[in-house]
Length: 626
Image 1 (cartoon, one colour):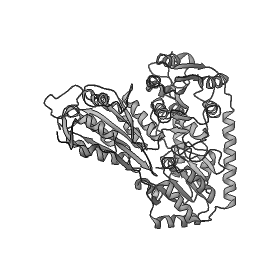
Image 2 (image 1 turned 45 degrees about the vertical axis):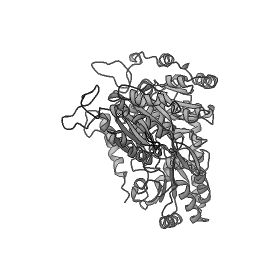
Image 3 (image 1 turned 180 degrees about the vertical axis):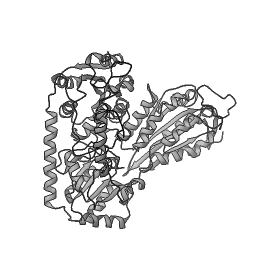
Image 4 (image 1 turned 120 degrees about the vertical axis):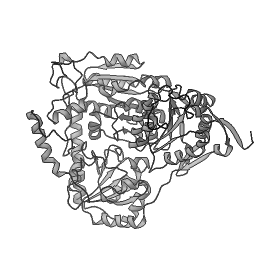
């Protein structure tokens, strides 16, 4: 072997390379990878598995579910503002394809994760191997091709030397503020074990600088003119504010200009909840304050948002015929949405430069007074919901209030799917930028516990509250075991509402009576609607299930029980599940918003016909922004 090369298997070279990758932003350097989650099988055991065993300084974490480990990695990356992440490896076949949902979740949320699924033999002579997908049209096709549409970069390495060109490209995408997401490198199991003389230079310490790109100066000047000409401007703060660490910059911009700010799901926490010009959540899951201002706004300043249909209330949130958009975003794709004036650049530096150009500009005093009055009225409404004492079962809103008001104020709350995200977006009072961790780009059921684990791994000193409904819990709860194995304590609030509360509510609003959304025995050959007698509930004991996974469990029946459980959980040294039944019918209002879910055009049910009429009345309010 030459002194300038090192003979390693492809898998060993992979781990050696990953250990040497660093990122830097604002002069601060840190390792990019914090280790590797994996489940081993014949597709990766002798390759990546052997390499991880050989290099224990690249930490291997055992997990229970391939989808869950990608959620954990994505949550870790989100908590770290995309400056660190984890690797995930699986065997071929079902192990690999189980990661696809996690890959989609990461890519849709613009979060970096590196996926290393095992693949079929590159030499093909023993094909079809166990778990191989065969195609009569191509011999170069496997289940890993399914990752292509949900990955920001995809490659299959059929030779060990291809690692030399694939890994730098993977790192380019993973560390790009604009292009990041899931990166998938499909690794044929035979190639993982093959040796090659790799250049030593390949394993040098590499620092990937995450840039703070500046917007075009002429576009900035035009944006300042548009803002000065506006009378009712409104900020829409998205996840890009948090990822660029621009929360203080945004606060100064708001206070300097007097422009009120609203928040997307990913952007909640951009301002503290009690800032007088924080209007709170916007859109279909928004507050009355934000939605009233949005309706009449003549200028929307979007910062790091992709304008999902929830944010725009299915394009009905903004009704001013003279509305214009200014979009600050690192991704040109998002910056140009709604025919906006695009400021393609980092949120922190772009906001600072825009502030300088605005000088002493301030919105009208009457407009600021209206915004502050709406803010105060909304806070009173949140207080009202927190104080509800619903009987005989507690309401979801009051449980959210208890966690928010009585839990650790420095903690992080994690959630993803069901009716909880909508209520949390409206009601959760954020006290620091990381307190509200909602995966709502994909709203992936099952993210919650795995995501909570990733958050805790990223910041072990913080308390982590995982809020999860019974539907999501039943889909993916096994990584309670991982949290206990690794000593990462979570406090899991498990709300049992006998089924799918969110879709039950949606079904009832569409005139369908909650069909197929209750956990109940079939009646007359089919599942009952939501008004079935209580006696037909399924005999599921979720508290007992959580105990079987090793969690400490506190069962509650009343609000007072729940408050006591929050206090008791703080003294427990391992993952704790607080279990409580809550009222599936007690919800939170829509507050001047709408979400477009088409209703059946013809039906034998009067309730469906009525819902269709209501839908037709709202549909014309949807707009194109041209």
